[in-house]
Length: 166
Image (cartoon, one colour):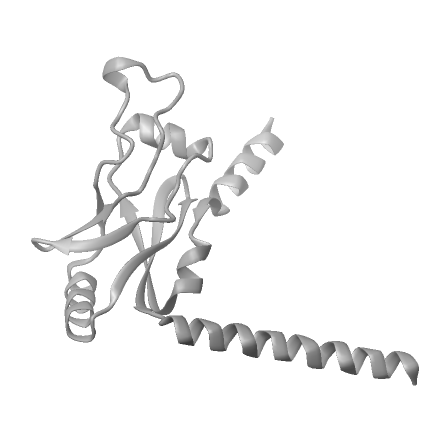
């Protein structure tokens, strides 16, 4: 019996990733990251625990000294009907320290940076979201990064071929 309890406590300590935003790392250069809590309803938490969330098109903004995430889609929990369900695309409040919010707000306004959600996960049983302070990459920068990656890949292939022949 105690072995089961020990396993469940270990599982709670591990981060369970619900959703990641891989597109953000491609479109933006991430300068800083921040972990925030989320204010959610019960059916939203149940839906997240099942692994349902989409953050590809979402973004965060600081309004009135509070941090909000927009266009994050959490589908309704399958067993929540009528009164128990929630609006899947509503804006959600994020929880962060006041100092961090002030720093990020000044950086975002001065340097024209964007706040982008990177991933949603559970840490110690609580839903968390990792935000990134990001600078947009231009199309030319993306192409250059792709060409550099391809050139490196070709060089690695050539060296492997030479080692194979020798």
